[in-house]
Image 1: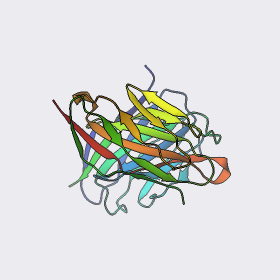
Image 2: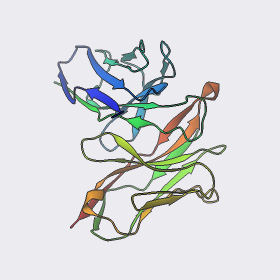
Image 3: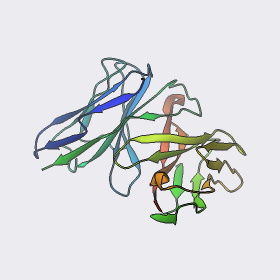
Image 4: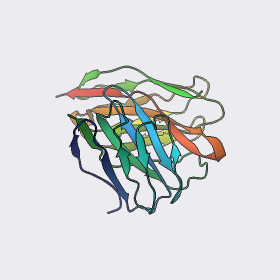
Length: 116
Length: 115
């Protein structure tokens, strides 16, 4: 089955530590995205990547970093500089990063990060 | 800039009731419109979409019509089930630099269906 996997499902971190969230897709999609979701709020874009070795900041990139060394993988690092990192993190991917108007995004199951 | 506004929840209905979740948008050009659903503890799934004015998206008994004259994309279902309990997000595709696109999201509307 094709899809997006995120691991771990729950993650706990001590304040001041960096932590990396995994996102893998086997859909052969070109574009990948990281969103943050807080209770009662919509999704906010952290970073996105169009192709391997390329990524761009989204709306709330401060305190986060990413890499895109392989087409199928787009890990997100939450650094100690992120002031309020406790949230639900969602990874998504899509085909054809070309300006198509119906560019559907497919989502992983999410990782819930809690800072202790 | 472009934006999406959804009705606030939570919405609580009895099984077999009629559902409407309002979504209006502000956009330049001709964005595509989407409804996504998020079941408890899970990621989001595309429920339906429409790419141009007067298009109707439909899936699993849910429908939404792209109304350009009222800038709306309201989600409807004639008879809800307990299994429809979830959070529903309205979104539109927005052009970014370099002819790329991203999704602009509403805040989500929580639906609880009681047996």
